[in-house]
Amino acid sequence: MDSRQFQILYADTDGACRWQRITSAIETGMQTGRLRPGDALPTQRELAAALGLTTGTVTRGYAEAMRRGLTTAVPGRGTFISSERQDRMPLGVETVPPRLCPSPEDGAKTNLGFIAPFDYLDPPLHQALANIAARLSSAEAADLQTCRRPAGLDRHREAGSLWARRYGVPAAGRDLLICAGAQHALMVTLISLCSPADRVAVESLSYPLIRHLAWRLRLGLAPIRTDIWGMLPDALESACRNGGIRAVYLMPSCRNPTLTHMPARRRQEITEVCRRHNVLIIEDDVYALTAASEDATPPFAVLAPERTCFIAATSEILGGGLRIAYLIPPQEYFDELERTVSYTVSMVPPLMAELASQWIADGTADRVLAAKNEEAALRNAAARTIFDGRSLMTRNTGYFCWLPLPETIPATSFVAEAARQGVIVAGGSHFMMGHAPQENGIRIALGGQKHRQQLTDALHKLAALLESDSCPPGSACGKKD
Image 1 (cartoon, helix red, strand yellow):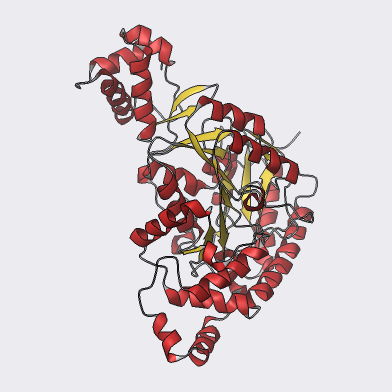
Image 2 (cartoon, helix red, strand yellow):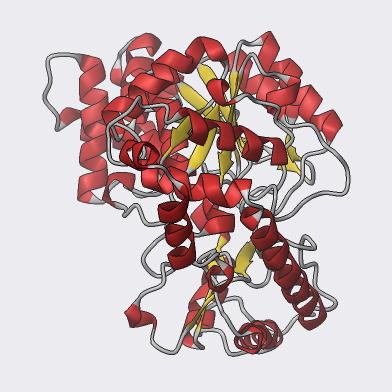
């Protein structure tokens, strides 16, 4: 939309303050369809000249629109209408659109869009509950039914410290809090340590939940360019110089959706940028244990413990219904984070924390992880064979893979046609954090089917679709060159 068209919207709005009228004009344009997702707004200088306002007034109006989730600012490119009204999007288990979440409506479709981490290999719950009943004293059992401090029981936090060490983070039990899963830990961190209008730096493709939480908490997102090693330090530096960056969110050991592993040198460079600009690091390494790298890359929590909040999850290993994660923050923020836990869930259910503690202590967690990684290795090998000749991105024991598509086959068209043929996958737009050109590809989850043959049948369908001309009329799907 150019500045002359915006003048019409501005003239139709009322408000005591001119900057408020700018925000109202943007919202009205979205409601009436005159502004659509992805539309670019005039530059602040252009709009100020067209409306006869100061640049500062326009800047304030744009800032309020971004705070309310109406727009997204992309450094070096401009301001754009948000791609989604995120307040209307459901918060599912993985915060995915309904078409990716498993449901009875899928019928005969094979869902490779949702990361279900080999649930059929989860440890048996009935046996664990029997062990707890036989092992605990009456006083210890009573602890599981009584409201305790929000950070969790001491013995559960000690088990959390053992789990954190699996990720290479040396933490004592007193240094961590128990949260109701990694999503809750992320929310607690953002609520506690960020204020409305703060910006969180994210990689250009990232975990969709961060986008939803930013909208709910009125935080801005700053999508940062990446390469094969992850977030670019120079691009982060530039964003920090523009101001407002409070934290950076990273999945450094196995980024969702592209499986990128950030090497030690890149982590050190990112750490130096964050120190120069006093930026917090939120390290959500949820898939680190499922796609272990051969090199012992130190986590940010070791490189910069004074500014890193590390999230160590258990659900991917021990079961999606076990909502237990351990949050290891800088100690100066511990009390504030614990207060946030107290007013979000009061405390994590101690029985769930007891289950996780038992499985960590008796070796069950390690055995289950080994079994899941062994099965994941077989499925990754099958995927590489089926997509032989394609630039499939996999990790030996990863729970998903990333398939870049040729420019002639848009991911949106491919996803739609795959669904028509009975296979659900996640397109790159689902993970897009801003309006920069998205990576044209699809994420393929490998662990949702108990029988490997069902997975390989679905993968063969996807491979055949790449070679076929069966995409919808008008789409760019077709035979490869």
